[in-house]
Image: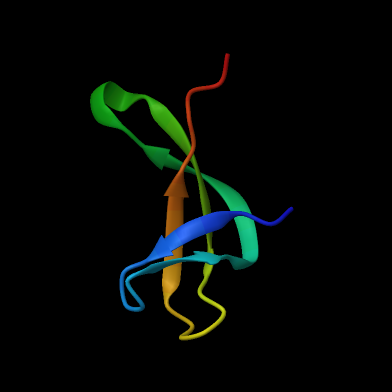
Length: 54
C-alpha cells in the first residue's frame, strides 16, 4: 500500500517507503491511527495522521 506523506526536509509530498500503521496518543487519552515510513529521496522519518475510524 503506497501512502503519500509530507517530508519536512525536502518540503514536498513524497510516497513513503517501508510504511507501517501505528497508533499515537491523542488528546483526552484517545488513540489515533497514523502511518509512518521514510522519505525515498533523503531518508527522513515521515508521518501521516489518519482519520477517525467509523
